[in-house]
Image (cartoon, rainbow, N blue to C red; front, side, top):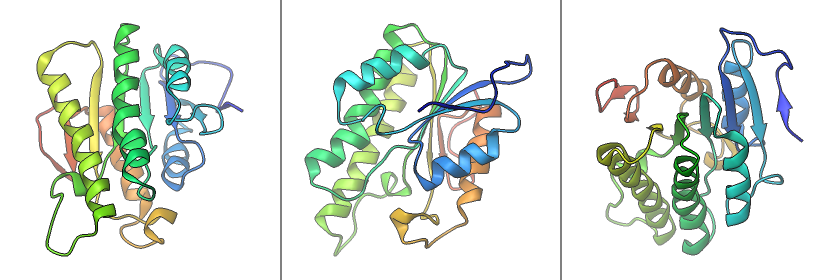
Length: 201
């Protein structure tokens, strides 16, 4: 079921889509945005990032939105599933949105692990997760540099924050949600912690 804050679109409100409706971060982002914007959330049951056809259908539905926020990501699972959900699906979504000549601002939630993928004693599972997030960041950076799309794309790489994925350890999840709200208002290419790694565009 699609969840919308209101049926009436006001001039000062952005149309925002959040992908990953049932996650902790998705809920925090929704709560942070829903008073000021028209927000629609899409769940895994509607559009599964492991299903190529679902991504095609989703892109056809959201390509006219002002802002698209992807909170989708997994850390558990084998390398095939982790790379499919964390890297291939987001890249394919960007490709499909570009085919629609979308001018949306797409924001992906990455991971600080993308900035430093390996260290002595790291598990293979964690290495797979980190590299999957790094690969997405590399594609986003390349897409921005090549100018082959009308999209504005940002990626935020937070450190561990409180969610089911982190056993509720780390920073307050609302700090991440507020950072995403800031990125909506001031787009950047890569946002790590609370420091900008690229100038505003």
